[in-house]
Image (tube, helix red, strand yellow):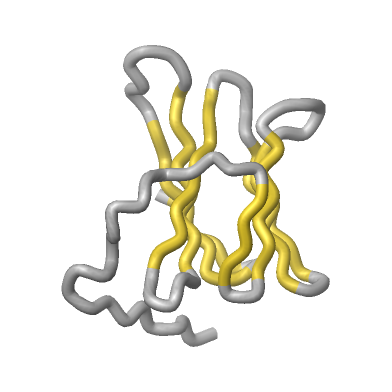
Length: 102
């Protein structure tokens, strides 16, 4: 399946928006719900009947950032808690069901 190109104009890729941990957000027809606690903590991205879940495991915290103009690319920061955070990972989701991780 072909990927959608990420068209980046100079100065528009990162606009100074900080990583977020808001409980709800929406972008590009998708809904994001962040549940930081409880029995199943993590982020759910949903579009129609499709969804992707990114679990938040013990000792870690999640934050996210939506990139692009228009905003349509979600990047999730998954980092250790406590000072200083030494290990972290990034995941990107362009649509529910399509995910890459580094």
